[in-house]
Length: 434
Length: 103
Image 1 (cartoon, each protein chain N blue to C red):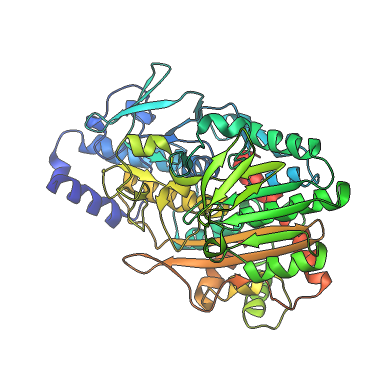
Image 2: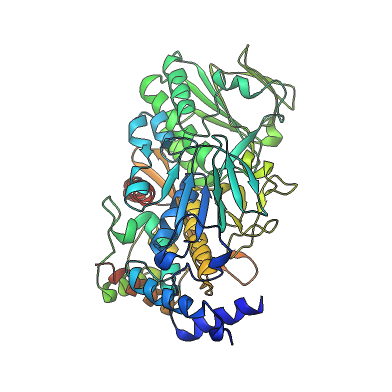
């Protein structure tokens, strides 16, 4: 301990931007080597989404000498952002599907397509379904969310083929889209929106908007009903105003206390039952389940009783286990929202924290931001933004900054924000996969 | 104290070697912490190729003035004034210098 302190002080005093492979290197199992035969420090990242990929790339940006392994089950990544545009008929699946070639080839991240099954925190080893073992000095978990299947009677994981969630983009998006395409004009689309906290707070309402756009264009006699577990939702006044402008009379939103809380689902008869005892039939039903931190994080003991992962708000290191960081939707990082942009912002700060820790330097104060665009219609965009800092104990939203698009904005403002939504998408996906 | 220990000289030597080896790496600086979150919209190193303006490589004066004007409601914007209000003069200067260096 004393020795470490002294070394750190020396490095700080010498003014060097130290590049890894130096501190405590004799303790590391010898597998890969940096310069002078020293083993390179190793970081293993679990989950190749907005948080994990961004973190991997920024670790390499800050320190090329760190050996970064990214473990991701799938070889392709379909973004949740803009998957609602696929449902609206504005985009196709190809345009929101990516692979890990650039992460591998441009940044030299070791990308492993396998599934993490276990961890040995003493030996600092991560194990996979494929039988591989990865040593780490620091691990970063970014497993996103998984669903809680026991919250609504009669609905289980098997029912997602009939009543899709489409809350992880991919096959589920395609399924929901094909159901909408098969629906007759005059049919009712019913969405069940989840209680807080959940991934992408404005997401269900952008989805309702995009589906209303598709139906208005192709099946104008149809209806959209949102059964919501909540009493209010993100950007609500802006969505409500947009719906009145673009889809008058088409979208009905039902608050929790007004019958929005669904207690039973019946996939066979395509029926939902609410607390009030009503039966709601849908030609197409989209049930977005209750959520918790990715299953792997809960299985490995990174989550607390809430089902989410508590972290040090500066470094995103787990408060339950040392040398393991948790970022993205799985982590408890509010007021940062569970959004792809926030996950990416967290991935960057976590990368800085990991590089600082490995090199024994002090991490500067982190700074986060979030920008979420939602499309109400193809030329009607709205946004929410915020800037966040670490106040010494927790993350806070900076007073006076942030907020939503103005309520009284004109058509050109909404059009500009729709255009910027596509620019946002171009940029953030380049950050990840470009 | 530790300098006299075996291996310490090697440690110092490897630090120096790595410094020159990692010239492409970016320092974990306060300016970087404030700036890299902007890349989410403005693209890697601020070099957006989409509908959001690129800022990487623009002059520090230009970026600083733009941010100050957004913040102080002197330049119209959609979302930028909401962001700019989250930064002090000194922080804006650091951001401007960070992106100006991304030639």
